[in-house]
Amino acid sequence: MRTKVEWASAVALVATVVTAVVSTQGSGAAASDSEPVMAAQDPQNTISAPAQDAAVRFVSQPVVQSLEAEAAPQDTMADAGVVYEAATLSELVDRQTMPAQVSRQMRCLAGGIYFESRGESLEGQLAVGRVIINRARSSRFPDNYCDVIYQRSQFSFVRGRKMPHIREKSKNWRRAVAIAQIALDDSWKNPAKGALFFHAARISPNWRLTRLARVDNHIFYR
Image (cartoon, rainbow, N blue to C red; front, side, top):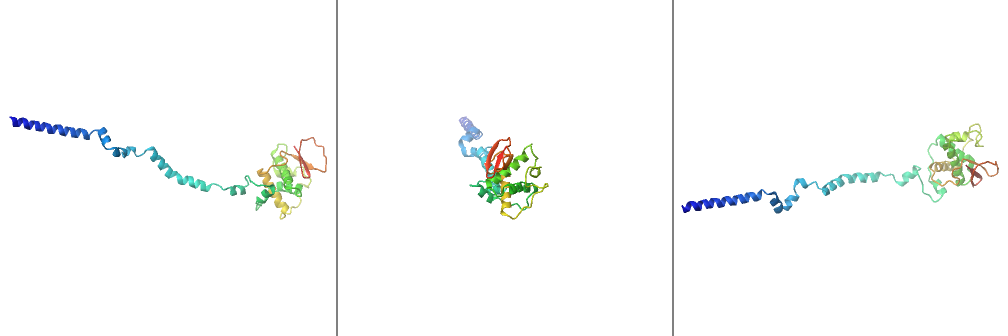
């Protein structure tokens, strides 16, 4: 009888041990407490914020670098005639590039500068060029440079809606084209800002206009 009791007790003890072991292995909390490294490596936690940031940087860095490399350098912008930085107007004129072919409108603008003021200072030539541009932009005058120049009784050098011959290989013509480009870009301060009219200083037409400035041998008004 005692043998049966001892055997039953032994069986009960074994069953208790087995139950305790199985219960411990099935507990998520217990597994997490005993295996912290494995919990950090769980597949559900691999796409963390730092990991996402690293992936974005890896993909986007080459794109950002290529955009910086493709940005237009300042010299290219200057050649395109956007805005120049120069110490003097003479320096700015020297930076201009003579176009291979001068358009009709540019020829009219530069021609007006050439015939009206080629013997004057660069500032005086610029002021004349700006008057032609201002007129083309004003509703009071034709809307393009050629029609402004050829408007009846406006420019004394025009004869029969034609310009005299231009010495296109001369320094004066190259300078007039450069001044025309600067006037179009508005990249140098105009000494007679807003002017729509001018006349030679040697005459007195008694215009009832607002006088703006005298530049060399011309007086400018609006």
